Amino acid sequence: MSTKNKILDAAEVLFADKGFNGTSLREITSQAEVNLAAVNYHFGSKKELIKAVMSRYMNELGPRLESALGALCSEEIKPNLVDVFSAFIDPLLHLNNFKENGTSIFLQLLGRGYTDSQGFLRWFLTTQYPEVIANFTDAVHKAYPELSAEEMFWRLHFTMGTIVFTMSSSEALIDIALSDFDRKVDIAGVIKQVIPYVAAGVAAPIIR
Amino acid sequence: MSTKNKILDAAEVLFADKGFNGTSLREITSQAEVNLAAVNYHFGSKKELIKAVMSRYMNELGPRLESALGALCSEEIKPNLVDVFSAFIDPLLHLNNFKENGTSIFLQLLGRGYTDSQGFLRWFLTTQYPEVIANFTDAVHKAYPELSAEEMFWRLHFTMGTIVFTMSSSEALIDIALSDFDRKVDIAGVIKQVIPYVAAGVAAPIIR
DNA sequence: GGCTATTTTAAACGCCTGTTTGAATTTACA
DNA sequence: TGTAAATTCAAACAGGCGTTTAAAATAGCC
Image 1 (cartoon, rainbow over the protein chains, first blue to last red):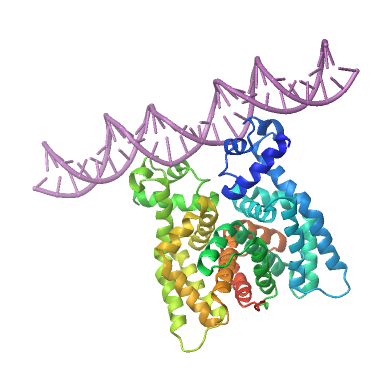
Image 2 (spheres, chains in turn brown, blue, cyan, orange):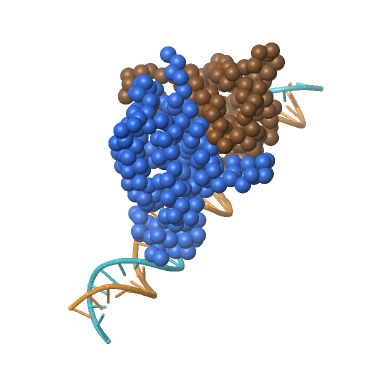
């Protein structure tokens, strides 16, 4: 295991748990059992390390997401919104093969990135991976063409908020669900719960 | 204007903008034009200052929210979910009278509190203001009695996520909407957009 | 006016942060 | 095996953090 990967592995877990600002390089390097200076040697700075952590996941997720959404767009029959959102399930759950708890970690990182560091991660994702977003809006437009561009903009951001926020606090919520309802829920279970919710939200009647 | 209030006024804006961890006491006190030590003198610690900032809003919002939701529950006719969520509008917008941009600041603070500081604010709100949550779940249950307690739990947290996340990045989103659609949107406009979304999400058909 | 209690102030405390340095060590290749 | 490049390492850097201290200033009250 290379030093670079030891750092990435330790960093992603700590970042997901405590946020980017809330995690120090000393925590990361001692967890990874490497020297403190290794981060700056291999990545240049903490900011570049954050980008590297996100890129590793996006490079794994991006192509699968594109092909899943692309397949949906090229079909003859018009998809419904549940289909569109369900297209996310397999690519997201595949991250669990890539890495233990990969799905959960990635979604938590996404949530952290949206609120930490004054939205620089939003800039990073939208500029580095614009085709993912374009594919998604295309699919939604095909499923629900009556929605104007502006209404779609807002509803997609509401959806992003629902997913990202839920997942960034999913551990706490899963614990509450376990103690209140004696129900063991995993990340796949949460995703299955959230899809009808966001699909109905995006499909809500338009009030003008 | 008392020193205490000067600190609270400066702190809430900075906390909303940059998070609790991301804002230093030195930023707060220099913005408020008071001495650095004043925070620890008047509030004891940074953590207590955060609680004080949140309490000032909750004390303003709580009673209005309770009466709005209480009125809904005591009505003869069964409310629908749009009514339930609409009950939040007036109490929330009233915060704009209480304080300039009060609605926006409060919702941003709420969002920060859920992700910053490992959820201690969730603990603070649920233990200090449980009746608000109870009123809300009662109203939703009356509007949609088929929903089981567990399904309601998840859908309410999805809703919380949608609102809180949207509002915590509302400034950035409003800017994008302005440049992409030439549409000036304010916080009330965003709230009106989000209500049909969350109402439809909570009302989504149950998949068992 | 004088005394007490409250508040404000400048300075320092100890600790933690990301980053840099230069020497020691390991690795890779001829 | 010898040499040059790549990597690791301990140590220190400058700066920011929340908090504390004790003296100075202000306020309230008899």
